[in-house]
Image 1 (cartoon, rainbow, N blue to C red):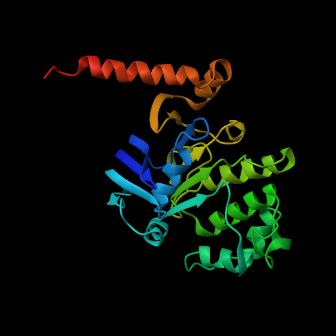
Image 2: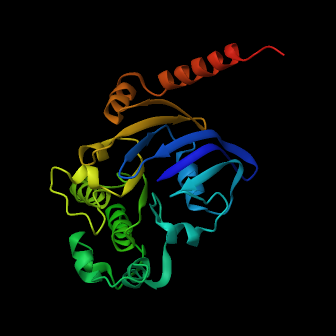
Length: 264
């Protein structure tokens, strides 16, 4: 589904991502941990093609196509979708109209979708205007429900969400990730094998793991990836040792590569 090869990204001339190699298989959910300022959001915004995020080296391959320098709308049409941690307010555009636009030409029952995330009373309001943290997340999820992307990018889905909204957000994220092809008639037992939707999720707290079956995870620190393992194991390790242990692991790995390099 997604393959990132030696990706280097600079923001306003400052290097942020420093050689990212990452792949996400069809139907797989990948969790990305890391402290603030480590480059996690930069990675997602680079995948979506936001301006100001300059790819200086490397490639982004999505569904077999090189999208490294493709415009944002082409990436969305190919099947990339993102839920933002801090989505913008759009005055003059009703939320219901935006959800219709997200459907990519398919007929969707917007009020019915909105009721599933308790959002039907907000459809006439301007996008994100005066929304609370939980309402922002439900608005983002509603747009993704209409879009039905093949790869879902979630930037801190738990951020700013209270306990009551967390259950709804978590279950909706799981529902989105459990999407299957229309021609798949798998039983519940075979459902995981038939899953076609992939996910890349950034999380600090790990609360989303109470609702989502994640397959692999890694830690991002100072623009680099390290410590690949099962997401639960990573979360438990961070809870016990903090991210400083990951920094030592990364430094040790870099030292090993230097030691193995041939002398010139």
